[in-house]
Structures are given as C-alpha cells and as structure tokens.
Length: 477
Image (cartoon, rainbow, N blue to C red; front, side):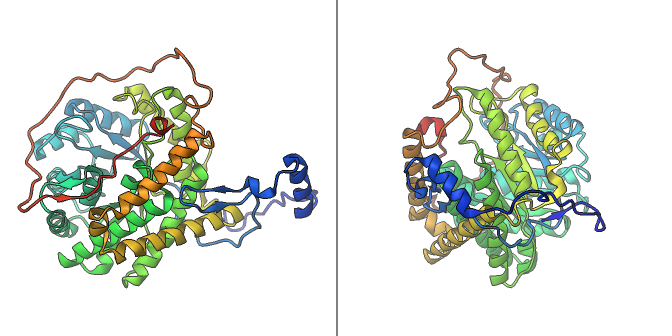
C-alpha cells in the first residue's frame, strides 16, 4: 500500500502490545458462536458463483490500482430544459465538481433536450472547457454530439474532453440500432480519428459494461463486456487510421459501483488487471482509465432517503477502488428529476470522502488484504474467461446478437431475485425496516422539453439483439 506520506516518515507500529493472531483460537470462537453449524455456513458466493470465505490469510501486496491518488468528482447534468441544464452545470462546478457528464436526449425524457451545436453551446455557456473536462453520454447520437462538442471547444488543444462514443452500450440496452451496428462503429471511429489530432488530451470511446450490470448481471460479465467493447473500439480506431497504442490510450472503461462496496472495489481493481492483459496481448502498453458510475438498479422508490447510504457506499468503492472519475446520481433518481438539494447531496458525498475522510490520500488501500486480493484475482479470472467466450463467439456484436450476453445476465438476475426473495440480500427501507408514510423528497419540475435533432439512422437494415433491459432490485424483491 502506497500512501501520500513523505518517504522519510516514521511508521507507527500499531500492533505493538497485541498478541499475534491465532487461527485456531479464532476457529474455536467461531465454532462456539455457530452452535454446531459448520464453518462452511459462513461462506458466501457472488451472483456468478465465486466463493467468499469467512477468513483469509494475509496476501502479498499487488501492484497499485493506479499511478496517483485522488479522483475526479464528475457531476451528471441531465435536466431536460437546456437553460436549467446550464444552471445545474455552473452550480456543480462552483460548488465542488471538477468535471461534467452531459447526458443528451432530444426527447427530454432521460437527458438534456438538445439537437444541435448551438444548443450544446448554450448548455455549456460559461463553462471553461480548458479547465473543467466535459464528458458526453449521447447514445446513437454520439458521433454527432462529438462534433457539437468540438464546435464548442473551438479546437482548443488543451481541452480535456471525453467524447465517450459508445454505440455498443446503446445497442445492448435498446436491443436494436437505427441501421447496422457495424456502421455505427465505423462512423464513430471515423469521427474519433478526425478529432484525435486537434484534441491530444481527449478520450474518444467509452468501453462500458454497465448495461450488463443494470440488467442484473454480475461482476465478471460486466468486466467481460467492457473488455470486449474496448477491443472492438480499438479495432475500429485502428481501421480508421490510429496506431494500436494510440487507440487504447484514447479508450476509457465504464463500470458501475453499488452498495456492496467490497465487490465493487474488487471489480475496479480487477478491471485494471484485465486491461493490462488485453493491451499487452494487442501490443500496446498504457494504464487503464476508469469512469465509475453509481448503480441505478440499487436505488429504491419505497424509501428514497436510504439511497443516500447506498450512494455513499458506491462512492467509497469508486474512490478506494481506484476510479479516475466517479459519477453519482441523485438519491431521488428512482422517483424523478433531482432538485438542487438532491444534486448538492451527490456532490457533498464525494467532497466529504475526499476532504474529510481523505479517502483519496492512499493509492490502492485494499493492497495486501487477503480477502480483497483473492476476490480481485477470482473476479479477474472469471471475467477473462467470459471475455474469451465472447471473442470465441465472434466478438461483442455477435455475442450480443446471439443472446449469449443476455442469457448470462438473465442467469445472474434470476439468482439475484431468488436471494432477494429469500432475504439473503436485504434492501434497507424495502425488505427490511420499511417505513409507511415517510416524508417524500421534493422533485424538480417535470415540465416537458423536446428538441429537433438529426436522425441517428445509418443506411442499411437495423441490427437487433436481446436487450439488456435495466431492472431495479426492489422490483425483483
């Protein structure tokens, strides 16, 4: 474990005065507590069957999660009204956010209603793109939105933009694409290759596995989907003219973090191991960059105030797991659009973790933990096996179209529903300690906003796949 302390700082022997740990003594206490039940009754399993033992031996320290401590507090901007979105963006940056994630939806139902470069410029009016990085979430409009952001940045080479082109996630979640999905990959790569030179600090693609997570999938499947998407995007960039090394350097991994902070933390650490193996196999060598977004499936409607606890756990997992950027939704997201108060809570959760809990002062705090090192290794191995199966099926597009990925997500979702039904997995405020007649939080105005936008359709027949439809845990319970 590497800390931010000076190299000559003295180490404090915290174990002085305590007896050495004795496994047999621990086992004797456990047997007494279990009252005849076997020790194996304490063993848990992940949704994908990986064992989590009740006790682990100390482990050798592995490589750090990343090269420097700290993370980017990234605020999600999604108000349908562009004027409100601009106000939210400026307020977020003024009150602690370091960057923005702009979700675009011309219908206004799931993001900012805009459909042109001029409209995007109005949303970013007053935002200094050379100082505050801006990331996009635009689905099949990603290539066009990248050009709109290019127009707003005006070719500033120091602008740290995240174009986040990701047609595969849009395809996986929707179950269809407007035109061949391969054409969307080619179009996105062409735009990305054109923007790579004027913006040397920009990332181009987001290789995300979050669609699998939100559909009820487990950690290994989410990582496998992200790795397979990264490979597909790197190949598309290479065909568009970028060297393999440059292609991988411009890809960001997108993963989810939820209230199970140990599993989420281990998953982020495993992602860096998988990335290292993937890039090495492709003849590239670059560090992984990870954007972690809080899980939507964990958020509940029944008692939304308890979502603050879930978001705090998720933010901790992202920060301690080595995410380069962490995006938290609002605790009211399961009900509707957040107010300024809800947005402030999302910012303050991360600010408290950073400025008061000093979570970002340490690189890889899980390093050396027998439990987390073992869990990281097992998740990475399981994810790599699933990644290999995706590639053997013909790559991520074919694995989506054939239902291979959807079937694996369905298996984990069924296991999760069973555990919720048996109360092996508990939801505070839903399955445990429900509150009748609690105080409902305020929601932002639901005024309708929509914008005309260019069609994302490309020539050729639509591609289709079994959709990775999002679920909520409370609906499975």
